[in-house]
Image 1 (cartoon, rainbow, N blue to C red):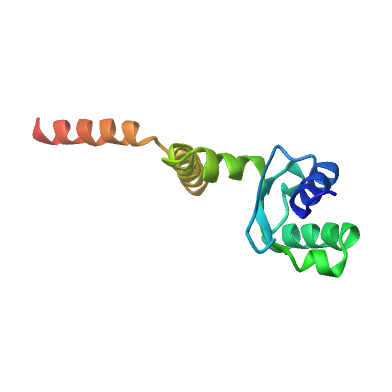
Image 2 (cartoon, one colour; image 1 turned 180 degrees about the horizontal axis):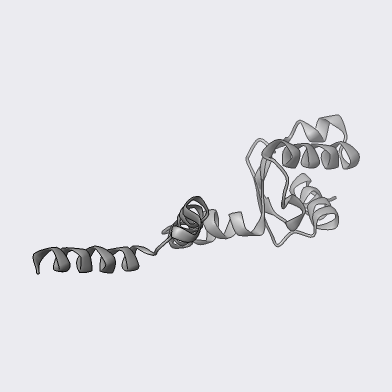
Length: 130
C-alpha cells in the first residue's frame, strides 16, 4: 500500500513537473516539506497555496488531507536562493543587481556606477586643489 508521503510526491510530480521536492513524514503521519516548480512562476503566495490545495482536494479524501501539513511552494530560483545557497551568496548577488537596476531606473541617463562616481569626485577634488 502506498504511503501518504509517496502519494503526495507522486501527485506533485504528475501535476507540477517540479524541479525538486523534499517531503518528510512525522511519527504521527503528518506529511510536510517543500516543492520547487516553474508552475509557481508569476503567482502570488496565496495563489500558490490555492494551487496546492486544489490538487490535494482533487486527489485526496478529507481524512488524508488532514494529514498533509505545510508544503511550501517555491519557484526554482527561490529554491536556489533559499535552500541551495546556505551562505546566501546568490541572494546577495541578486540583491545587489536589483539595487543597481533600481538606481539606474530612478536616475535614468544620469546614472553612473559607484566607480565612475568615485573617479568623478576624485577629479573634482584634484581640480579644486590645483
